Amino acid sequence: QSKSTASENSFRDGLSLGYGPASPLHNTRLYDESNKEEDVRVVFYRDSASWCPYCQKVWIALETKRIPYRVERINMRCYGDKPATFLRLQPNGNIPVCIIDGTVYGQSNDI
Image (cartoon, rainbow, N blue to C red; front, top):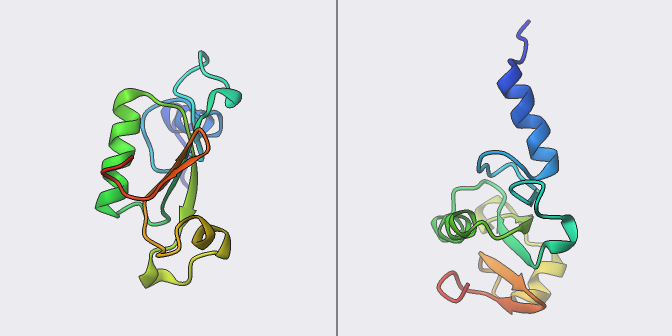
């Protein structure tokens, strides 16, 4: 039976708070205690498998600039249908999509 190390436990605790090193496992990314949940102005719709290169490009930019964001994971077409709520935002179903201060951006270069 395996046991988690102290650093693994610390990493997992940070995930729930949005802190710690960059990880595709974050649902909300705050970076540290200086940012609060209400500071999040970006909702990032990305692939659920975390391997779409266009999503990676946006993710790297958000991380590099340390912009707080919330993640919504969306299936790529090869993994199944997209939710109707997402298709209302992005009728063609392409990812990534970001909502920034209420404005929808549907192409990685625009984001």
